[in-house]
Image 1: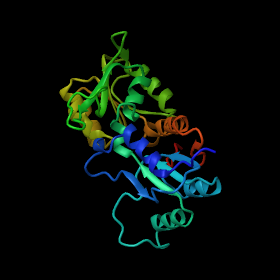
Image 2: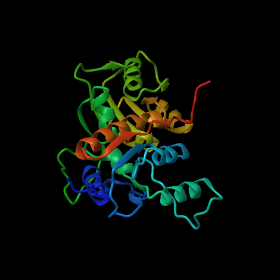
Image 3: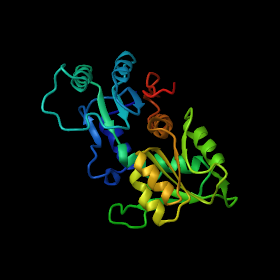
Length: 272
């Protein structure tokens, strides 16, 4: 009889896959809810812990939720049923469901969200947009860091075509674009989620196009002024596809566990 899978083993795997040293200083990553010695039979991945995801985990007998966005994210002064976060936390604790979040470490790791997005749209010679020193080694193999950038084997591609490829990879129903669709782009940078701050690094590297989940109106204006095209695929779309891939990775690493990506999670934003 196989030994039971222990939560600590899953945590150790996730920390090797997405080292916590890569997380931003403001982030809240790692095991956030649960007993590291508890046994794990079911694992569900999601972008964000919501009431729907919590109910799904309970109904499907999941023991662990691996969420991209930390839950809880901010420090709590009380845990009660008077607010949404408290209600969900109490439900999780009562049902002995643990929560782990890799968040920005998953964004930046070697096979993380930004790397998947960059390779998915066909970029070559993919490198971190903002390299990060990991464990005292400045040249990690492969290199890691915030964002990714690269070029095309064919030399260039129209902005309109890049936008279509970004839609295909992320399954975004539509995207917002800053720039002319006919413009020929030689280099592209990517940053999942809300990564408008990467515009500065993109300008420094003379990148022609920056693909983001979302950013502010004023960042769009600055990008236009600096002749950097933008493609905004939406926060949810820019990360959800990789959460589904993470379920596959965990399933292969822990074949005795039932692993799936949340079937109840949806983008809260719809286009009318």
